Length: 209
Image (tube, rainbow, N blue to C red):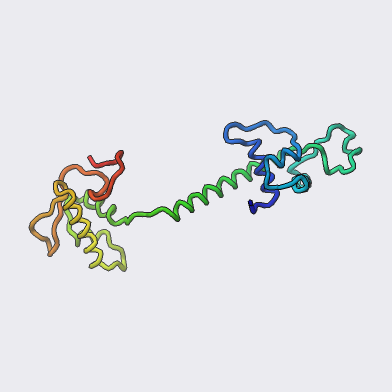
């Protein structure tokens, strides 16, 4: 069951009828039974009537009587046979729809972010650096990719493992020189390669050349 206040429920119900996704309907008077059909969370006629009366007091709805003297003859002049949106009511209805859509998108994005598994960004950054320089060592890469406070020894080991794995997976493109530079292997990128590291599965549309 929704926790929205009755005013929001009614405005969103009116929006579901007058502002459907496909095509907006022309405004027209409506009955309490139609209000319940469009806003089932109001639950009963009494709730629909009291909410419409509240909106009428704030100028968002107006009474629609069957004839000029019908309001006088009716025992309850606040209970007309039909109601109608005013200009202010139409704007309130549109604002309620916009707010509801915004909240829905925000909640959906938040839920997706909760379950989304973000991959380690180090391989992507290392591969981009490797593609740009074409020749690199673990120490050189760590100096560029490391942040303040990082354990540089661990970072160099991680980078070395990625470079070693890429060399094993695709030795034709990721080549390792026999001579070391300052104790580190030098890796050379040869030929045309794509955006993704050799060991990372790339989408078919972005597979390496």
